[in-house]
Image (cartoon, helix red, strand yellow):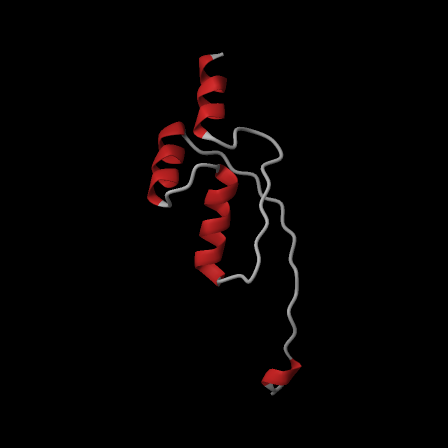
Length: 74
């Protein structure tokens, strides 16, 4: 069995895509007290595996509830 000194830090880059209803998005953002989808994902991942550093970016779709509202009113 490898000793603790053999462990090293790693960076992992992932891409995820998910669909969510507007009400579920609002509820999740309120529960985690976040103002953006990027912040919400960062909080969820950090709570799950306690990362040292997390960077998130929304590449497509609304990142805030204001952006969601703009899409739904179009």
